[in-house]
Length: 100
Image (cartoon, rainbow, N blue to C red; front, side):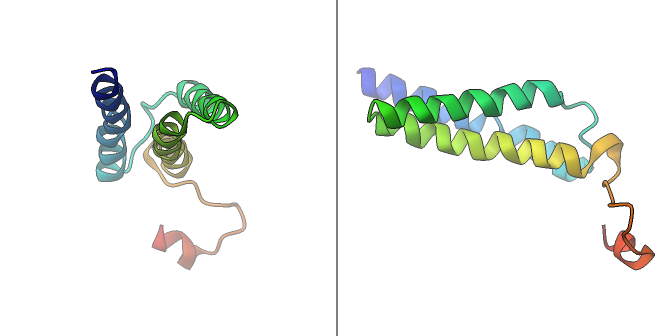
């Protein structure tokens, strides 16, 4: 029974990031996403992975690797679509800006 509950919890944790990623990509806007919250979330998942490796709790590692990837994706999208507009490096040409 504990494994069933653990699996359900892991699946819920993993699935919880998908709607946010979908919304950001669809709207091309991440202005409402909290940078600090996701930075702390990424740090937390990294620590869980370290804990799982050190204690050889491979299900903990697996679930948290997926969550780390998804939450890091949100951070990357936050950077990419800051204030609703893609960030463009200062030296980028006009043609390259149009691609974004």
